[in-house]
Length: 486
Image 1 (cartoon, rainbow, N blue to C red):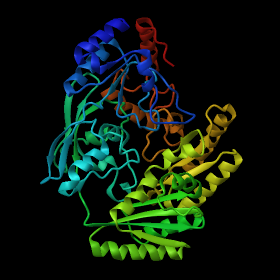
Image 2 (cartoon, one colour):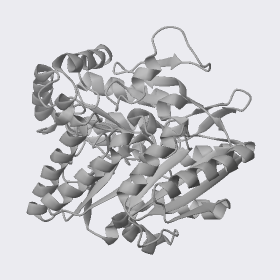
Image 3 (cartoon, rainbow, N blue to C red):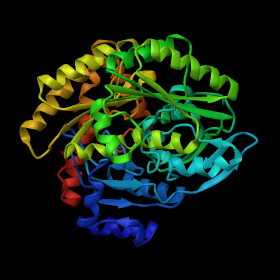
Image 4 (cartoon, rainbow, N blue to C red):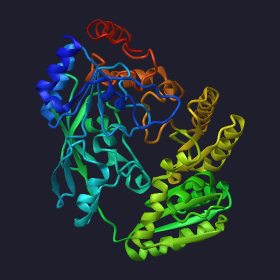
């Protein structure tokens, strides 16, 4: 089947309005949300926008017959290249599967389609006293399906956990084009934890078409504290002391001075421009407990060297403080035309030394690096500022990135906290995992997807997975569609 015949088949399944195939229209699907130096772009043969699970299954069956790769895609806000079609093929974008199908407040669950926007689910249930806890910074745009694929976190995962802690069951389409349900409505289900395997699988073993998610009761009261310090060392020590005291805030975020310089003039959130670092600490729960905990945190911060502690109890003030944090990445355009946002994890007790190392890398490679991150669980987001049109700067960013990642791994950290591996960090996997580890992961991938058709060139280091299968498929694609994948 040639390219024209393939498009006709897809249009027969979905209708012409749900199939994107012109070269101009496909350009916007060559990227995900990354603006960095490491992720390559690629163009699919077609992008399809199904509206039902049955349409997804039919597309997967067609792609399987034709030997075409399949790349699941949500809103495209991912930051590791996970939804980029590295080997062409068909991108299945689930953004038009955007219905909230059922809400069961008695059992605190909702059944949703994968294209439901994260924040819209919370907005839907908030009037009844509930919310959906995982809250990535992109929650105004990212979808539940993408959150599931990446096991997304966010500021409030410190207390409430990441996406996997809020998924009870999934309807899925496997690479053979069949629909299945895994998990269930209850807290526990018999047998293997298959939905635990799927959450965070980065689209490598199939695609989610429905999700049974857990809803969280809204707290009685919420307080947010803005605490500023003369330097990041003092702020880091305060984070360590807060957690050591047995306190688990709903969120505990840090921003350094370079971040403040970008954010405050743009959003006027109230961050002191001369602060070396600020902490944003949210406490929620019963009113009396929140008040007592807020006082304890304030005392800890003052002992650690805080210059001031300001409590925001009114919703409008809290929202403004959080707007500054969640829009920090967008504000970086005020400082540089390009950025490379990292996502690594280090032990909380190593925050100060890690940030010192980030500063040293910034000086060694002559690159400004801003820091905004989930301090409570050590999930760092160093943001390297550069101009991607400047080849020398791009090379320095790649060199600095390697030094940063190796350092974080060497002190007992992790490659990623919430952005996933994708293509960005696949070649660093050998720093953390042995050949046997990777073989075990590949075994799971092979069990679900023996033809390696779903989201190829992701997570596993280049040349590691199914080399012969990939070579045969590439030759077939070149012959049928004139595609010459990497």
